[in-house]
Amino acid sequence: MSARIYQRPKNAMQSGKARTEEWVLEFEQSEARRPDPLMGWTGSADTQSQVVLTFPSKDEAKAYAERYGIAARVHATPPKAIKLQAYADNFR
Image (cartoon, rainbow, N blue to C red):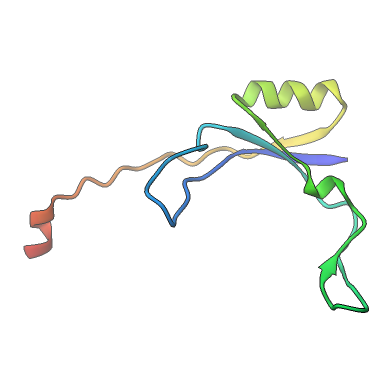
């Protein structure tokens, strides 16, 4: 069972930064998805891929993975670049 640990990015559809400080432990799929013969929806019998755990810090997420023997990869958070722009720049 393997998982990945990452920090949520800011939602591109909204200006708020809610839940961006949380760290997420998400299990990777252990079997391939396949189409349902009746409805045609894609699914699998892997229920671990539906589990998403949140932690307040990266260290707590790594400690949880080590405690339960989960092979977890930590994805680094890209640096946040703030672009300062004034309204007057639109008219130059």
